[in-house]
Amino acid sequence: MARTVDEARHRERRALVVETAAELFAKRGFAKTTTASIARAAGISTGSLFYYFTDKHAIFRAIFEQDIPDSEALFAGHADTTDPLASILDIVGTLAEPAREDLAHGLLVELLRVIDDDPKLARVVMANEAIVHTGFTQLIEKAAAAGSVDPELDAGEAATWIRSIIDAAYLNADPDAKTDPVPMLKLIVARFLGNDTSLGDRT
Amino acid sequence: MARTVDEARHRERRALVVETAAELFAKRGFAKTTTASIARAAGISTGSLFYYFTDKHAIFRAIFEQDIPDSEALFAGHADTTDPLASILDIVGTLAEPAREDLAHGLLVELLRVIDDDPKLARVVMANEAIVHTGFTQLIEKAAAAGSVDPELDAGEAATWIRSIIDAAYLNADPDAKTDPVPMLKLIVARFLGNDTSLGDRT
DNA sequence: GTCTATAGCAGGATAGAC
DNA sequence: GTCTATCCTGCTATAGAC
Image (cartoon, rainbow over all chains, first blue to last red; front, side, top):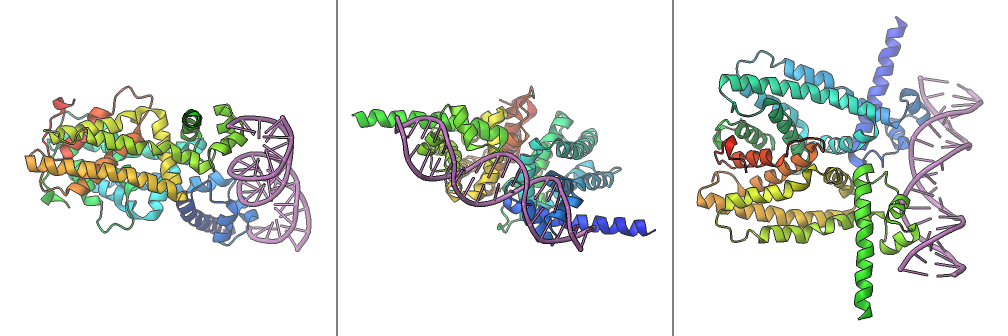
């Protein structure tokens, strides 16, 4: 059973590096973050760094690998909702939640850039996007059938736009801003979906 | 008058380099685009390149300097509109027009990254954003006064969100997609502003 | 598994001839 | 003004000792 302990230790070590690297990538960008600085910040040598990761891209990729199980869990939690529109708005809120964190903003920008240079990363991200897109599409269809969403909207297209608007919230998030962007984001999505929500309804 | 000719020639040369560089920056990214490759693509030497531009950042910055007069002209054209809501949607369409071009998508992503590393670029972009924000805010106020926009919306905040939603269209732009994103974008903005537009109304 | 040391390469910017 | 040649810095990734 010593093997199990080793693997746990290995995972822990790796996770620490990933966390440290995420901060640097978000702040300085992928290209300007040196592997030496990652090693230094994580308290190890570059030699050890390349023992844990095959190359610099693998470190970056590891940041996003957790998103897949997270997204699956998020939509699974609303699988048999009785109010699909409320579920959509709830999920929008959850996905947009980290938008104000500096880290999330910087990482999204880096992701958009690096994704074109790393096919493996592209596969990870697309797998996650597929989960989100399918989840939203099904909820929109359900809501349309229940009469709480404009039935003339194409569910798949609407799902894509909702995702884009969430991303835009990340991009434009001002970490210094006093106001939480989530309520307005929900209002925009709610009105887009054809629900005639008044300003007072923000949750 | 020889001076005038020289300056015109100088400007032309510079403009050619900027155009060439924009394509490379959009496709490969700022960090991965070498000054040597820019010079090669523009048909000059690196020596000449650095005769026209002080450094690599100056080349990138030049791409966005034209945006300021463009934005001013765009909003000036709607200064005494009689239908402010229509003007807003019209401007949204104009600003989102290039979203489908590969170039525009890539440049937005690069801009988001590089802006943190170049204070001069940040100033150029902020000047442009101020023009857009002020323009939208005034039109939203006008429209609210005329009764065509939800008066409970904060005009400045709404202006910021409209800008974000336009960015979303750029982010999401799929150059291979057959469908023009502009109609849906206008629908989202119209509904956000509280105008109860049906799907059939897309212009 | 972790380190130090360094190979090996590439890129931004400049010098100086023409 | 435009070129060629190149300096110099800084980076990723590896080799090899412990």
